[in-house]
Image 1 (cartoon, rainbow over the protein chains, first blue to last red):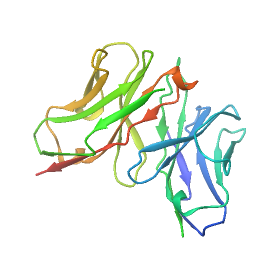
Image 2: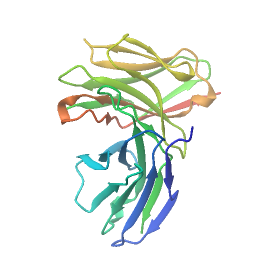
Image 3: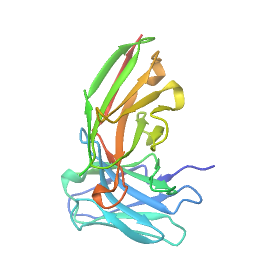
Image 4: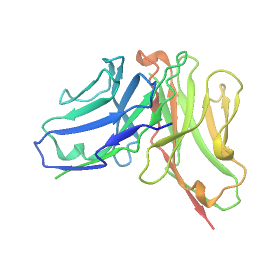
Length: 114
Length: 115
């Protein structure tokens, strides 16, 4: 069974540009989550999509946005990039069983803003 | 609101020694609890989870964790460390206090294993 995949592996952008990150969930999973992992800060929750709709959003500015497609894949868009957006962006998918969000993570996209 | 505290950003052990990684949580309702491991340049892999069944939870790679409600703790242990256990470990808590059961993660503990 294929795991969660993310592309690209690495992305280098200049301050003020836009970045688009992509994620494909495990087959059969309908929920996709995005996290930002900055050095020393652990995982910060960004967005949760389920069945094509945004279900929850973390404490990030509106320039962080995304969407989920009919095949449940997802993309994260970051507009007006700032230097502090440099981080590892992790995507996870889950099949919610009961109330527990048991998440399976991709390898991440390393975004560097210069 | 739920929160997670992992005591010690770095834990160093010798190969063959006991591994103990500490996690304390705050939650106003019975939570779900998770431990994940992250190897260099990889995503997070689920080690084990507590979902209100047995309080002692066994996971992959010989790890286990015990849910102690009175201490609000969910410490991760392994009797004998291997070199391959060197990685970053994250504890996560999930309850409905934030409006959904999306997990909140601790800042992580880096496990260093010496030969």
